[in-house]
Length: 114
Length: 114
Image: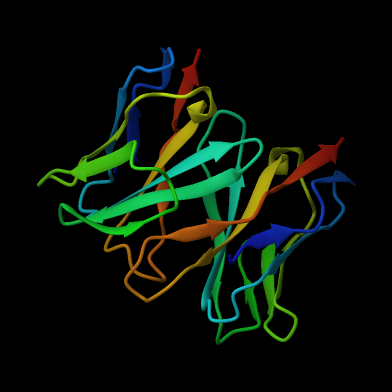
């Protein structure tokens, strides 16, 4: 079974631009969660999608948004990029997103904002 | 807000020795805890988990201990190998049973000396 895939792996943008990141979960998994990883803040939860609905949201500004498609693939969008948005963005999938469901992480997308 | 923290940022051990990585959590209502390993350039990889109705769980060369009285979690790695060198994160499942949200600690870097 293929693992979680994320595209692109690396991205360089400038301040004020917007970016869209993509995540394909493991086949059969219906829950996709997104995390931001930075050296200063560590791994922080962004949001979770299940059956095309956002089920949970972290403490990030409205510039961060996401969506999930009927095939469970998910995208996240960051608008009006700021320097502080430079980070590794990780996506994780699980069967149902419930407690005790193992979450499998992708390799991440490294976003650099100049 | 709630947070999960690790006591030491870096742990250096000799190959073949046992390693102990500690974690303190603050949400007494959390009932599921996970340890992840993250190697350079990769996403976090599941190591072992434990539910709050247990105080110990063993895997292959790894043991997780949970002390709910002092809200402390530890990961023990037996006969540490160079391939164990990575950053280790503890995480707690937050909220209801239907959630994919994880709260991560800051991470401990494990360095294994040959």
